Length: 237
Image (tube, rainbow, N blue to C red; front, side, top):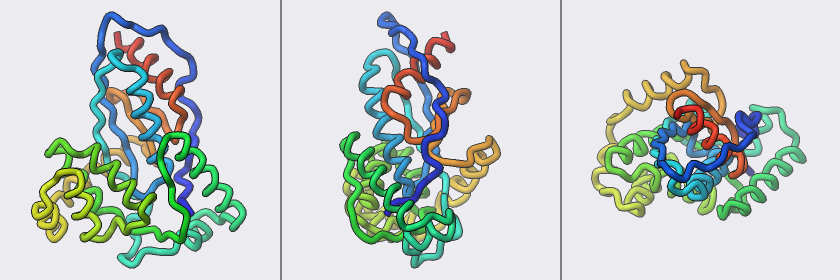
């Protein structure tokens, strides 16, 4: 079962702008998300495919920003069905419907959401590793690998063993990752980033902020991202 992360906020942009083939526009994208959010997986896959479709129209730089859906989650985590029922008041039928929708959307985008029992875990240490990975030029790869570890392989994203394994898998130094996890390194930086985005009004994920000015929320379809990005590019010229 998967957590319904306030999915499908309204489409911020819906109309298209003609392609400008004569120039490439730099685009900064802050992708605010949590590792345990399935709609963040869908949003990232759709965004990546939209950027691929846009080709030379934009030169995008994605920066992953931290957001914790459950910052007070204890180390042992919580059964996800129990968690959703407590937090959202969802019935078993509603939970199963959400689960099926997410699996279908994931499959459309080439991502596998595995079936089976799942728990919700604390993700703060994963965000600390992501902060470090950006400095190493591996943040996007680590984010994707963390999503796969949790949603496809049913791994515990709070486990230091799992996190070190995933870091090594994407080419990061395992010993350095372990040292970070065993310390409080990057704790201040992650907390400050979380507070910054909360102070800017971010209350649900995924939220994508383009060029510090435009926001698109939710697990939107590829075509919505293409349209939104073209509109942003047009307004910035």
